[in-house]
Every structure is written in C-alpha cells, then in structure tokens.
Amino acid sequence: MSLTDAVFQKMLADGSKRMDGDVYWQPDPDDSPNWKFPVPIRSDKGWPLFVRASFNPAIMHSNRA
Image 1 (cartoon, one colour):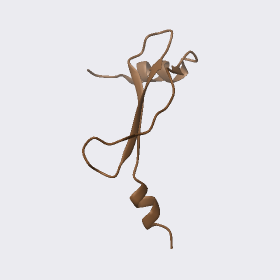
Image 2 (image 1 turned 90 degrees about the vertical axis):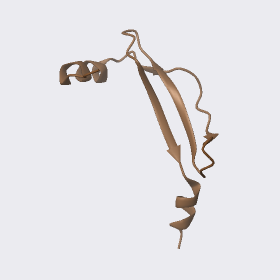
Image 3 (image 1 turned 180 degrees about the vertical axis):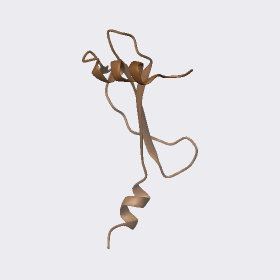
C-alpha cells in the first residue's frame, strides 16, 4: 500500500487521534533484553495507526561512566 504525502499530512492534521488504552511495557518474546509496547491509535477518521516503542536497559546502563 502506498501512502501519498497528501494522505500523510491529513493523518498528521487529524486532531481526533488518541491512544486507545494504557501503555504497558512487556519483555520482548524473542529472548532479547528489550522491553516494548504497542498501543493502537484511534481517530474519528479510522486511520490504521499504532505506536510501537522499544527500550533496551543494557544500552542505558552501558552508557553510564
């Protein structure tokens, strides 16, 4: 599926977007040290969006000097 710049701009401008539910960090099921969360994004326009984030605590601790 292709996404034109015009459609992308409409998605960005849609003020009805909202996270659907709470954010719960979960361990990555692939046995990595990562934690992640996915959260669906709802809007009045029905865009098929979600937010997904990951966090690797090993990287954070290795940067401390």
